[in-house]
Image 1 (cartoon, rainbow, N blue to C red):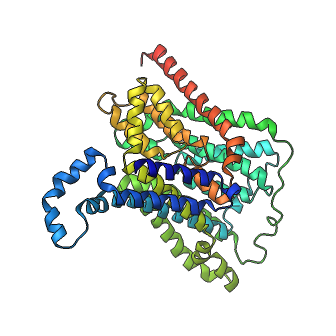
Image 2: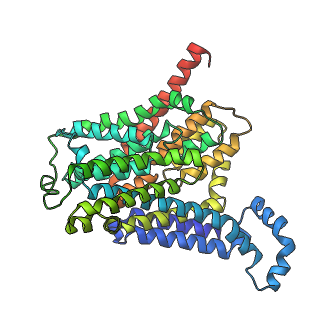
Image 3: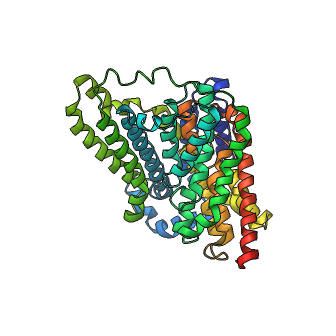
Length: 462
């Protein structure tokens, strides 16, 4: 049965990749894949659960098995699944979805009040290459304090106001995905994998910046250098840009207020998580609640037509729910493999066949372009927790590879999945145009990391 579930997972991923060829929306393929994987897992739970985890059920639940059956309740094994793995996995999935919905709503709310026009007003570059570099480095820096998902959503909203040519915009969005993933790798709050390693007390806040900043810069710099010669001419802005807002009673202070509150709300999410230890979606919902309240208060200064098009309810209607459902399906599918121990077993097999820790970290990064990097990095942490100390080079390399390897495929990171949904990016288009650039940047960053480690060791004996 495990083989059947893995086959369904692979077929589902192929259906997502071949969306434009088979003419089936990727959200439908993702949801069907995720639900089927979990359903088969639940039905065959007693034979699929890893032995070490099944032992937990056996010790803690076996004594009450007869009582549960007499009471007409769930099968004890299924009850363990519901209470344990499934509930935990669904809680994480729900948290990510609420985070995504909150971030998309905040961005739509700022956009409805024309807050992004204040940013695009200062980006005067018309040359395609110049604009690409500006957008890429903004995304890189923004992702170091936000997460790559939120950064990608914000930058796509900005690009829609700057670039009218959809094919050119797709190239820019592809580079934004690389920039968002690279920017999140060198700070402890910028990427979920780096945050995991930090929270396990394996890396320090300043040390990760010292060791990974240059590698992350090169990870973006190389794709920019490779793609820049292919871009010629100037960017054509959207035709409606100059007319935007002429029929609305949105004043300058409305734009400034919502841009400030939106950016402040997004930036406050990692701070909220650090000090409260609550899930990130709670901080995002708090920010959304504040913007919602302000929106209700400010709406009294607008005419009826503008009020109806700038409220939160209007912003919620603009959210691409197919992208949200696509996320749901992907997270369910990958979560089922993680709960069955497939990803952990993969990491264990890597350890058994490859003894070099650096090579394992690099492979984990590449594999994370196909499956979720979180369980892979978590398995890596468990494998080497006893042998590698604080700020060990392996932890730094694992943080870099886990954070940037997902750029090699459009479905390999939250940033890529968001871009795929929002801009309708074709899997194979990304594979042809962006993946080689991402791969070159990935290995170039690794080379710089090793060079930096060698220089530090030679000069300072570290």
